[in-house]
Image 1 (spheres, rainbow, N blue to C red):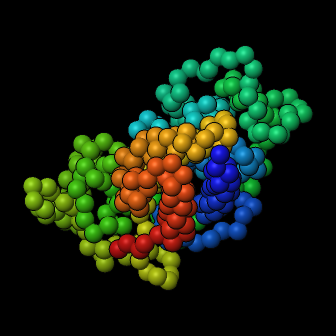
Image 2: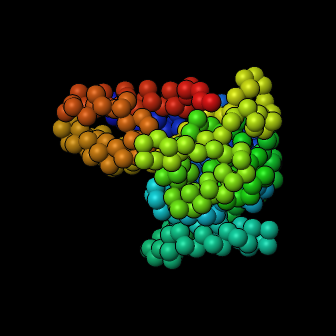
Image 3: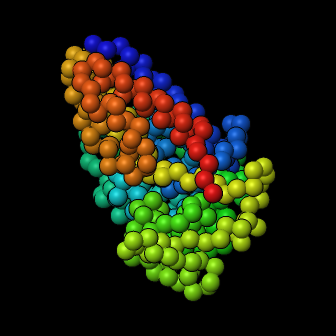
Length: 347
């Protein structure tokens, strides 16, 4: 038995909750000190990743829902569907009752499109508690109950604010205000945060089809403000960052936000969380634990490669038994500290 496994799971959950509060506060959620981070937030990936983790913090869960009722028009339903499908992020049974509640108002009618996520409501003998250890003392919320979750009726606090567009975290919302909630905004964000890129690479990191990204890049190139050049057989696109610095409304430093491939990073973290959450895992032998962690590492490796951090776990891939457990948990902690708190600067 390895007691560090259970304690690491608790530490990981705590670190992620603090991080999620920090992210959502930057977007306008009430009740937490906002910290100006240098990276740009991916709101769709953040939403999908947040809901399962926020089950252990009812206040955060409800503040996210409150924020969506105020700012749901800023979310791209297309990207929610794509990221849910391509990266298997989140839990559709948590998102769908929220979407159902929002779609009941004309302001958020577009959320009905999320019916493609998760299919029909599940059939089960009894709903599961949405928040462990929190009794439901009043009438249960019918939307959540339909999707297999038991919680009290949700009441909007109306405390959330609209995102401030004068900070790096909300840079994507600024570009969506200029270019619309579509692929063009994400492509421009990627180009502004990088020196140059190939359409297929940009498509993988933005969550859109490569063909759609290619068409947008070709259209943008005709403006004369986006350029292309050959790198081997590939056509790469770039822009002159100095021409676009009028979009920067924060200082110091006067640089564009850091780009983090949030969707694959969240996917990898989700895989490790699912592994650590297996019932009774902390009571099994170290050999069994190391086998399960090895499976989680192998399953998450494509996402880690896409997030650009797979090399940080190379030392763990050669180990077995208790050595694998110790090294892997240490590597994950280090990656979290570096990626979530001190990312490397970009252009």
